[in-house]
Length: 209
View: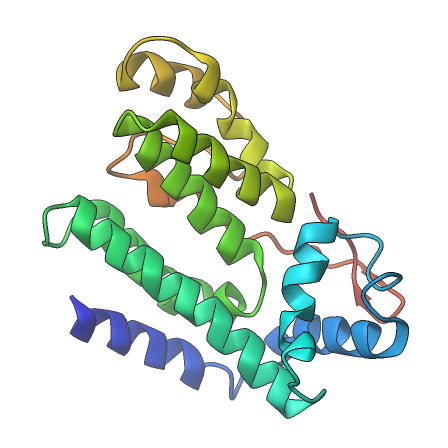
């Protein structure tokens, strides 16, 4: 599994060469946080997301290239952790969900691990897995993390409120519109959609829900 994972992510890193524009979001975050500080920077984003983006600077990482490297490395660490989670959930073997997750970077490009949507997607998907495993407290916590970073994981929250088994809960989540349509626990990685907003404000990305 790790061989396929490393190969797919190396492809994504190499794609940064012709697609360096994918770093524009990180550049914007770095510039605004360095200029305005955590209290005032990025008011268009949820505060937990801003605090997450400010972590490298709080840890003493300098602006510019060090910030780019630290932020991308953190996103990749979350990505690797969720890939491992999918592998363990499938009994230590490849599954359809894991194959889809591994294919995201080669298909969508490096934007996958240069935007914090990836973290919200992993949290939302893990919440549904926890729900399927009858661990509602963990599922609620993961859903709260996902919703605190981006708004769209809230589409999966109704499943937390439905009594019964996974089949009944899936029936509530499945018709939900938007980028977070969950079909089943095994294919929960379909939640991850590319959320690209071409609008720019103040030289940076326009807020997206």
